[in-house]
Image 1 (cartoon, rainbow, N blue to C red):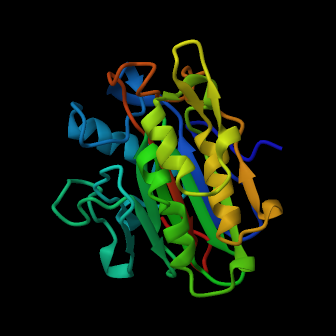
Image 2 (image 1 turned 180 degrees about the vertical axis):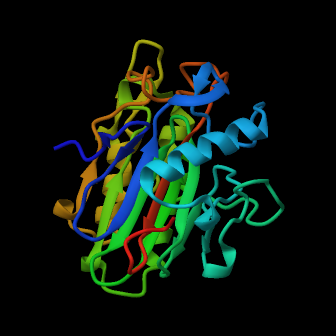
Length: 268
C-alpha cells in the first residue's frame, strides 16, 4: 500500500506511533514557482513572506507550529546533526550560519519537527517503535553514495529491530540517469547494487535511488518488512510535486518532515 496519502496540501503517512511524517505538495501556496505554488525554501528566489505564509498553511494542516520546526542548510553531503529542544526555530524564519552542510537530522525529543527541502532527491525517514528517536535524511545521489541513511541508523543507540524506515517521494529510475563514474561509486560500496542501474539509449544509466536506500537500510540491519518505499515519483507526478530536473531548476521545493507529538497530541 502506498504510504504517502494526500490530505490537502501535504502527503502524510499514517502509523500507530504518534508520529507526524510527510512531505508537502506543490499546490495551495502563494509563491511564483509557478503561480500559487507551495514553495517551502527560503534559499531560492522567492519572497520570504511568501514562504512564511506557506509555512503557516503547512503548520496548520499537520498541527505542528513553526516555532517547533528546525531546518539545516543542506549541501548534498552526508553530515548529520543531533537536535535538542533549544534548537527549535533554527533556520525556519530566516537562514543563519548554524548547521551549514548538514543533510541529516535526528532527535530523541518530542515536540520537534525535523524538516528539509526536496525537489527530486530522496527523503529518508526513521523512527523507533520503543522510544522517541526520529531522523530525516536528504539522500540525493551524493548523500546516498555517502551512506547518509546508514549514518542516521548508526546514530540510534537502541536495537536496530526497533527502527522503521520510510523512503519518500523522489525522482524514479526511468527519470534519472547517471554516468559510468557515478555508477562505479555505488558499485564500489559492495552492496550488490548492479540491478539498481539500467543502461539506456543515451549510453547512460537509469538509477533507482529509492531501491538503493532500501538496500542500505537492510544492510544496516533493518528488516525488509520494516521498510516502506513510496511509489510516487516527483518527475512523472510533476503536477503534484516539484521536480528540479524536469523543470531545469526553475521550480520550488517541497518540505519533508517528521516529528513526535508531545503528550497532549498537539504542537500548536
